Image (cartoon, rainbow, N blue to C red):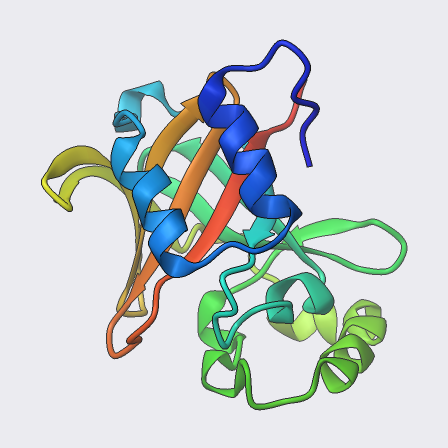
Length: 188
């Protein structure tokens, strides 16, 4: 979680939500108040991901599996899923090889076991090919950046929390509850 001393009210509110007790309604209230961020404004580079736990069925799954974040190379070349193995090596994963349908169905202990084997199975999951792109998309009546997965029915929508933090929500076809996450730009 980010330090909040001297931070903007939105940054402080996000930190409070991440500290616990967040509901989908509270996450939506913050998301809907946040300003848009255009595709052109999203800084190229690696962004570290964090979960905003609203008790979604995916809660804890991405973190336990070694999810690291996202990488934006250009608007047309995005790695939507970065993972880190136990040694800290970060690598892009082909989203088609991630069994999203099992999220929330496999106990977190089983997910952690998979993470321990990322160094071995990582070669099957890795990709060098970008698997998403950024576009400005109207969502909840606001035109803001969205990340469109190339091969899956997923769009991640973003709003600006502060100059280096985005609040995202996954829009996955058939998912009835929102999955919220936070991206923090890595310093170069």
